[in-house]
Length: 105
Image (cartoon, rainbow, N blue to C red; front, side, top):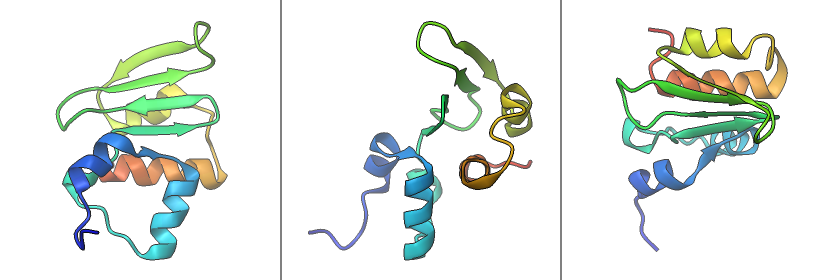
């Protein structure tokens, strides 16, 4: 087993969720920029970003009936998703994920 995490693989394969957020916080894991998960998911919301400078792609609602939008900033993501998630663990995980991508900036 490698002593150093493969952060690029982590970024590709891990979706940022409340359980992942909790596990990283409990383990004291600091994720470097190359390890930022490209996707966030919670309760009918999925957001993806492939790299800095590219838009966030936001999905809200069920497959086929949901709304999709590309937005430029973390503030735009929050505005698109308002009022959900507005509080609790989902909100905290979303804000952590957006912070990994430079929000607020």
